[in-house]
Amino acid sequence: MMLTDFIMNRSLFLLVSLLGSLLSLSRAAEPGFPHFAAATVQPLATEAAVNAAKKGGNAVDAAVAAGLTLGVVDGHNSGIGGGCFLVIRTADGTLTAIDGREMAPSKASRDMYLIGGHLDNEASKTGALASGIPGALRAYDLAIKKHGKLKLADLLLPAADIAEKGFPIDEVYARKLAATAEKLKLFPASREIFFKADGSPLQKGDLLIQKDLAKTYRAIAEHGIAWFYEGEYAQKVDAWMQANGGISSAADFANYKAIEREPVRASYRGYDIVAMPPPSSGGVHVAQILSILEQFPVRHFRASSRVHVITEAMKLAFADRAYWLGDPDFVNVPRGLIDPAYAKELAAKINLDHMTPVPAHGTPPRWEGDIFGKHTTHLSTADAEGHWVALNQTINTAFGSKVIVPGTGVLLNDEMDDFAVQPGVPNAFKLIGAEANSIAPGKRPLSSMSPTLVFKDGKPILTVGAAGGPTIITQTLLLISNIIDQGMEPNAALKEPRFHQQWQPDELKIETTFDENTLKRVEALGHKLDRSAGFGACQCVMWDDQRKLLVPAHDPRIPGKADGY
Image (cartoon, rainbow, N blue to C red):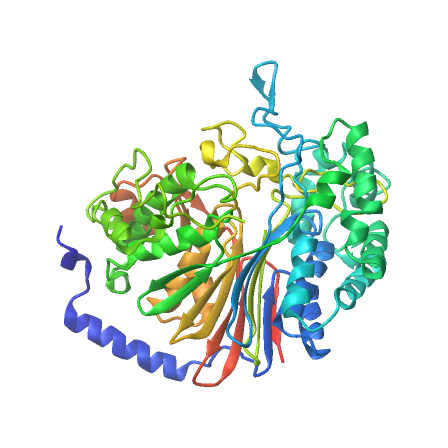
């Protein structure tokens, strides 16, 4: 079928456009704020961001305040026992990406999960061998010292108060706690915090009190992050690991460094995209998929055709991800993955009539030498001075490794599962990887986190990112496409139905909020549908140039809050 067969009749299109313009004029604009805006998955974290800004902080301070608070109130997703990525635009126009991704311990090895010749699928997800060395706290500290106005202690202490006094857990927290209860029970300190006296897990509305975490936050506020990386906390982890068959050591903590990297830069229909470079795969592949989509007039496609073309672009990008992506300090990640000529080459493989199998990765230009430089919760903040921040942070799967070292209150991550524990073996998110993402001492595992900034005519207009494993990449690009291609405001864009294809397994995860006729048409194009009531958690802040306001938006699928002043 010709491309034009997918485009609406010209006169009908003009009529629909006119009606859409009239409707947009008549509907109420989304709430915005002149000075500062933030969006997170938890109201207490959004309040922490707003409070930090009102106390004289900028969007960087506010983002760190929200991140530290999420480590208390959304600890099943992220915290100082995990890692993070920040993409920052400062008021003077400086762009930077801060890599606080976890690192493999110095005693880690490529085959560390092969026991007696057999792969232990659980060891990279639960217990003493599952954790990388956490980097979130060092990244926060670096961001604040270089680009913030407040002290880290100013942001830690309010979060410590919440941890000590407690807060009622919401439906999402309770559901994830129930789903992981059996594994959490294996570890005494975790059991003590998250379970009632009768052995049942806390439920929605129950007060979660974390006195040890409050003490840890206050100790860091008093003594600095050296207490965590070179002092008492690192020593407690070392002792626990030695007693429980782990390999993380105090020396590993002391050797951890957060890194400032050059962001990924790309363009899409006259907009500039600034995103996180490797070991994030998100920045590379959001840019790659958008570059492929730029070859098609997706704005004029009917829903099923748009889903089809974007899905095919997702498949091509995820096939490349599985082969090429890894820690740039250890492997060569080709810049050609985001080359416009390569995008055109990949776009030419897309058949508008039917799904096309993708047997393997592509080969980007100059893959041998032109490489990226060596060296899951999302929140967005922006302020009137011109600071814009996209922050993704995670401990990986729900409650990470399920381990809390006694006396610390800190959940340790299970990011070792984000390595390819063996080439071709799927991880917890069914992602597969190759040699580029194999385990090595000091190496950072590949991540799907996709903190992204979007610019128009050199000015920031959007900060966006998401949570949800590999769907982070596709949620982020769909939000950007909904805003740029469909002309939507941010809250409306977040309500749009989602879909996700990651090459392997070869199935299209798609929300049933699409109408049934669209789902049937997509299926008729050859896609195997995995229907979902809803998935993901995307947050953003957008600049409304007409009203000169910052418009924050949080994902309607989950509890959260968008606010400002």
